[in-house]
Image 1 (cartoon, one colour):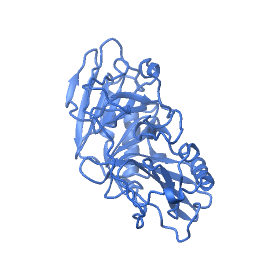
Image 2 (cartoon, helix red, strand yellow):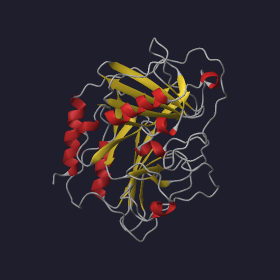
Image 3 (cartoon, one colour):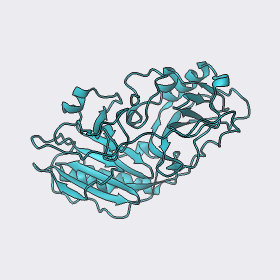
Image 4 (cartoon, one colour):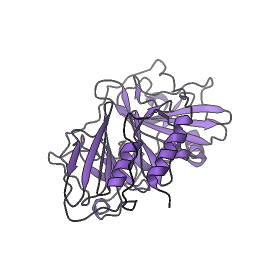
Amino acid sequence: MRDPEEMLREGLGHLADEVGTRVPLAQRARAGRRRRTRRMVGVATAAAVLVAAGGVGAALHGSGSSAAPSVGTPTDVPTQHSVLAPDGYRLEVWQNVGVYVPVGWGWGGAPGACGVGPSVGADGHRLTAAERTDGVLPGYVGRPVAQTPRCPKSATQGTSAAMPFVWLGAKDAPVEANLGHGFVVESQKYGDTTVTVGSSDARLRRTILASAHWMTGGACADWLGTPPMSGEQPSVGTAGPVAPYAMTVCAYAPAAMSGYQLLYQEQLADGPAKQLVDAVSDAKPTGEFSCFGASGGEWVLLHLTAADGTRDYVVDLSCPSIADPSGLQHELTSADVLPWAVDGVNAVLHGSPLIDVPGRLIAQ
C-alpha cells in the first residue's frame, strides 16, 4: 500500500497544474412580486468539546515515522478535481479553503454552533443518538452549523471518546492541545478560516493539515452578495439540459455580516442530475405563491452540466420552492430534494416542516 502522504503530495501536484475556470453563477432575481423578510439561521454559542479518555478512535492509516509534507502557505488549487483526489481521501470545502479527509468519515458540527460532534454517517444519513456514540464512524468533519433545531444552554458533544475529527471554521479552537492517551488536537489558520484536526495518529494529523489549500476558480463561489437565482433561459418552463452528466451542489446560508457564505459543495454524477430534472419537470408550479425576490434563509445552487450547455436550478428552503432554469418556481417536494440532499449536505442545511425527507437535512 502506498504511503498516504506521498499520494497527497502527488495529488496536490497534479491539481496545481490544472487550470480552473469559474462556472458562471445564476443571474440575479427578476423584479419580485413580493419580498419576505430576511430570516437568519439561529446559531447558539458553542460548548467546549471534551474528548474523554478511555479509548482511541479508529484511524485509517497505520503508524509510522515518515516525514510529514511541508505545511506552509496553502497552494491555489482549482476545485474541479474530485477525480484527482488521492486514493482513500475526499475533498471538503468551507468557504474558500479546501482540505482532504479520509473517505470513510461522516459529517457533523464544530465549535461555533450547538451539536458539536458527528450527526451524519458516511453514507449521508442522519445518525440516531445511538449511532453518534457507538463508535461506528472512524471520524467526522465538523462545521460550525447548528445540528439541532433548538439549542439548549448546555449543549453537549454527543460523540464517542477520542473519535478523530476535522473542524472547518471552528470558533476558539486550540492551536495545540494534548487531551491524554495520545489524542492531540492541532489547528492552523488559513486566512479567516481555521482547520482543526484531532486524532491519536500524528501522521494523519500532519497529512490533513498539509492538504489544506485555497480554493480558486470553482463552480461554487465562496460568498454571494445576493441569493443565487436562476432565470438564464429565454423560454419560461425550460425543464433543463438534455442528458446532464454532472451536478454541482453549492449550499449557502446567511453570512454573519452580509451576503451568503458557502457551507458545502460536492459534485454528483449523471444519475442524480437526471433525477432532479425529471422531478422538477413533474413538480407543480407555485404560481401566486412564488417567492420572487426573496432574501435571507438557506439556499442551494444546483449547477447542471450537459453536452448542450449548463443550467442552474435554485432551491429556496425558506419558501420553500425550487426554480428551474427559466426562473419558474415549483413546489419543493421530497422528489425534488432527494437527488441533491446527500452526504455532508445533510449536516449543513435545515429542512422545512413543509417537505418530508426522512433521514435528510437537519430537522426543524
